[in-house]
Image (cartoon, rainbow, N blue to C red; front, side):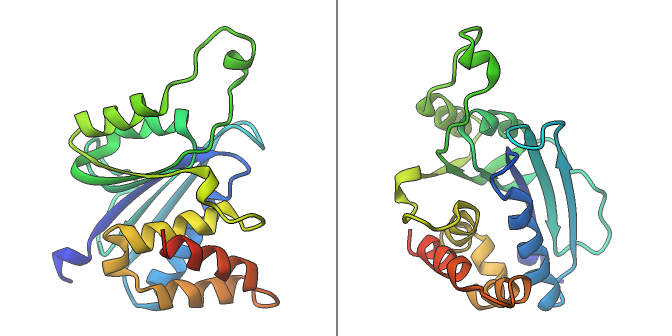
Length: 194
């Protein structure tokens, strides 16, 4: 296995965003290419709005479940404040794809905490030696699922696309939604173009 086919990916967001679906589609596409993959999802206590994160390790035949600190080649964050939790996991030189959706935590809504500014998050990524890639929420076409849009952007704008061709990801989407994959394929393709 070539070292350029090894990629550690850290996903983070909140419940209800479809973050674990991103991980499942990546894992299925990797498996279809006979690329070793380990997928480790984690759900917070809340069904909707609580912390959700996952780790994917592609191309490793012997691997542990956790990406070490400063070990993720790619971080995909789907919520601005939760993105801060992923900065310590990003390796120097790694890519950090941030979809700028904001889900205000209860403490912020009650006025007991402040919500981090987008530029603060992006600056923390740069300080960690990462390369931020920002997707504004208004770049998502109306009516399309954000998670597959973000997956498309990850394949189109990061080194993930060097390992998983768009065609393999599209096939995984068709397999997951065999009756009607069209909305999900449209979202993925829209993200590829961003």
